[in-house]
Amino acid sequence: MKEKGILLPIFSLPSKYGIGDFGKEAYEFIDILSENGMKYWEILPINACDRLPYSPISYYALEEDYISLDKLKEYGLIEDVEERETRDRVIYDDFKEKYYKQAFSKFTKDKEYKEFIKRKEINEYAKFMSNQKGQSKEYYLFLQYILYKQWMELKEYANSKDIKIIGDMPVYPTFNSVETKCNPKCFEMKNGKFTFEAGTPPDYFNSDGQKWNSPVYNVKNMEKDNYKYLVKRFKYHLKLFDKVRVDYFRGYDSFFKIPIGKSGKEGFYTDGVSYGFFDELFKDENIRIEDLIIEDLGDIREETVELRKHYGFTRQKILQFSIDLNNFYDKDNEDENVLVFPGNHDCQTIHGWYKTLNDEYKERLKEFLRRNECYDINVNIGIMQYCAKCKAKIAIITVQDILGLDDSARINVPGVQMDENWSWKLVDFNDFRERIKDFK
Image 1 (tube, helix red, strand yellow):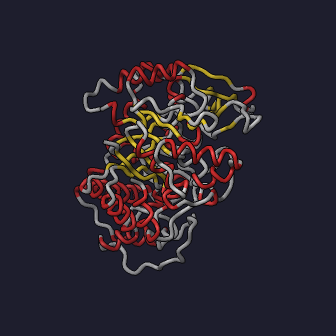
Image 2 (cartoon, helix red, strand yellow):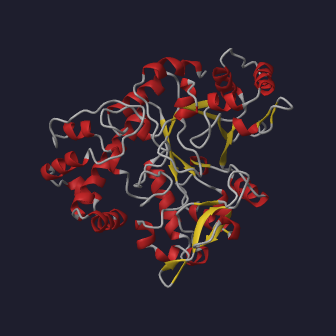
Image 3 (cartoon, helix red, strand yellow):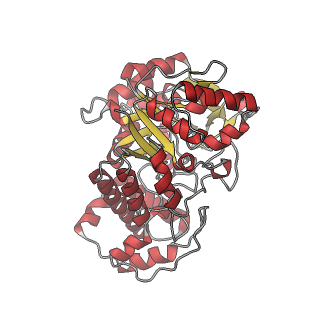
């Protein structure tokens, strides 16, 4: 039976405090999913970052903005909290900081906390942040303890409602990060300086290619200690989430690197960690192949396909790219071991995509849906119905597509720096409660 779910970043949850978090709205969202037969909640990365979810500062620390002030009140660590105007955009600022400091001043270290702060990576993060921002190391240890506690409480609640969380793991950290400071041998460097930047080659959309403000891995050094750095990270993420979306799977087969200071025109591909790493990872019998979902979209070479097939990973497909409107055919509707989206966080919404089609292709799309017995006067609903019927074993729809919103509600436009990226959020769940019933 087809399993279905919804994609919504944590920051996009409704909130009285400017940004979605691990508080009561997250619990309410889980209730709505459960009531409507959903099995998955897919989120974007929740690693500590500077607004950009796919450029983490740490793979073990969580993003401080996601602390729930309401839950801090429940813990008795703060009292009254000022509410903010509810908007459909995230407010990125330090509004919560004063409440975090109040909570820290009242917090009493217990056995659970003392056990948590023994973690090496959390201590490295706390020291890094103390050096960056000037607060005490203990303050950042406290914040991470609260984040981990609130997240695991939320995940436990989701699981109790038969909802599994699909987390997301970025492929690279940012240059200025705990990861690069504490694991320099894992990255390509010479005399303490980075030699390459991760990115993509020139294409139709960007004549100079993309640069990601991230270092690339030193594969030879990783191989020397059996990929310990990556193995540990994967295991940790499989503890945080029920399933993990592995970002940029192509990079584990072969990755693009650009000499520092140069453009993508001077970059080139080189071999990744590949079979050596995955063989090492799966030596642990507790690591299940079915709990990894790989992102293998875009320019994929045959060797990447062979790597995916070798392990039997669940892959992703996006209907906006797979429907051939010239031939009324879904080019990618043969494999069942697939998670299908109409579009994901980097795509146009269904409504936005549909508006870009000319009149002929709009009619062709409607005809495609009719042929698959998914026709509805609302194309948005027809696409959702097709996702629920196609051969893919999992269908995930973004909240924006459930609501039929246009491209003003996009989560991200790749390769373009603008304030609208990573900022869309729900004002409330009223419309969503009704519209989710169309996903059947």
